[in-house]
Length: 56
Image 1: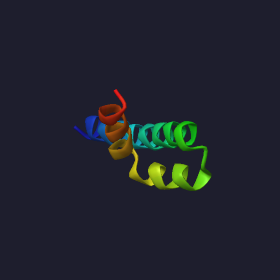
Image 2 (image 1 turned 90 degrees about the vertical axis):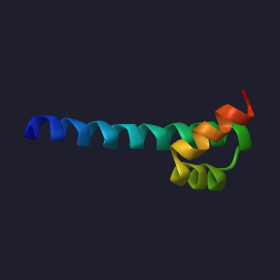
Image 3 (image 1 turned 180 degrees about the vertical axis):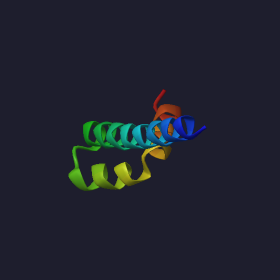
């Protein structure tokens, strides 16, 4: 049981990190602004999903 709990924790952390990085890359490519990239990086997956829905 402990191993599966650790696996879930690592997976969630990796997913959050990936979402942050993806949001920052999308933001910088779209707006060419480090400030917006940082802000959108803080939003993470929320901005990625928003961007996908609006710009799809």
